[in-house]
Image (cartoon, rainbow, N blue to C red):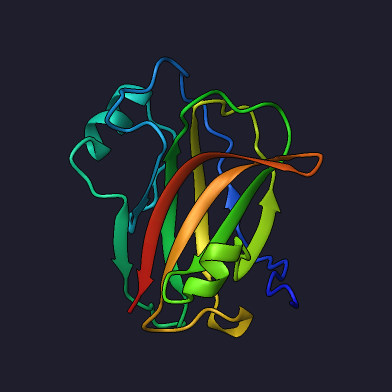
Length: 159
């Protein structure tokens, strides 16, 4: 079976954040959230407070440039190692690919010094295969040899 994985660079910019990395509260561990407002350097207490009642799923509305934009904030289950972070996006409606663990899109970005909280600006481009009306599951983690280490998961719908 042909893999549907394609490396996609979406024009993302990593925020090199000065977040103090303490312990992540249990209700946020392993969850990825999206904010339509850009998140800049803020402390961990402010982030945990902001997202403690949020759902790890969001509907994004296209901007005037026909792109979907958001800031991804992921709270990891365990500290990440130095090196690039990988984002896997799965089409939620494609049950066959989900079962086979074949992402629709996959790309790597620099991980920076963030060990427990990962902040990343997303610019989702429809010219790169993202489609209006689709919901994507996102997994954030790292690759070690042939093994994937997933630190957080979330969901984004494109409206």
